[in-house]
Image (cartoon, rainbow, N blue to C red; front, top):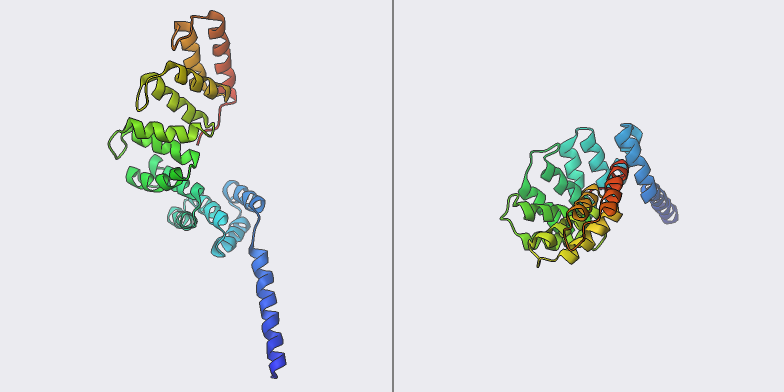
Length: 241
């Protein structure tokens, strides 16, 4: 084989490899579609395509594959893919691992592991992780209770208009836990959470109008309006992390 022929084979091999590599790359929309197919329909072809992309190092595919495998009760394998995505800096994967251990779903409940995975995601202001980290500090799950730290992490989510974090931070201001007591700040946060249709926040506002709390005057009409909104919010509740 001549040198020119050998080089031609090498060039062709590189072209084929690049074509195959390009084919393996999936867009975010592709991965989301495959996620639905893999989880809802247990679609083996979807899992195969996700596996190919995950093995190629696509972070989002690794996370989605991990979640799909856990849904299919292949928990150990799923966790390994979530860890690979986490190692690449995927905060959604870190959160998924943290929530898994926090809830004890598919794995034994382990607050230490939950904390370990949630904290780096929360430190990068990933709101769902910050909320769960706040819950851990507030309730002392596996660590000493720290109201100030809890409020700090709820604020991360509240700053991003996450309804449950707005509500938890409002509670902190109302009760003076970890932050200076402030009915004004509490009321503002409750109203923001209520506007996002969080039932607990609407119920709290209803009681405040009924009883004249947090600086509000008793207002029967406002109370009845909030009661009506509770029913509406239960039909269309705010998304929770």
